[in-house]
Image (tube, rainbow, N blue to C red; front, side, top):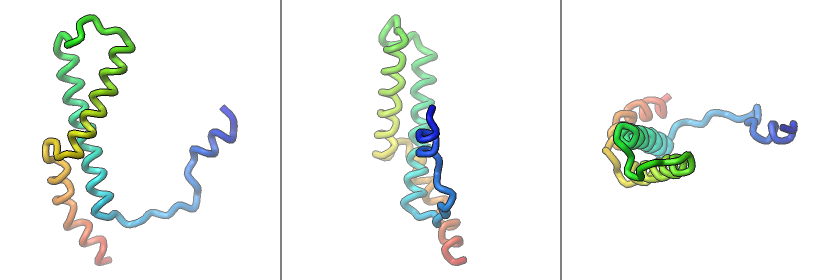
Length: 100
């Protein structure tokens, strides 16, 4: 890999951490919920015989991608309700951080 490709991926040294906003917290909570839902779907698929029958590696890859996308959309639409609970639980911490 060239030095150019590596340097374009690295973050600049001058980045500063900004305060967490409720929007950032909500987004992170939704991403966490999507990962959890994806793991549940993957575990359910792997424990069963598979709904496609004899899957090959390309079918496995496509199914993984479909599960990830489904989990992300499900989490954005409310999912299991975990994102809301996490965001509400972190509101007091956000308010305390803003007072500093």
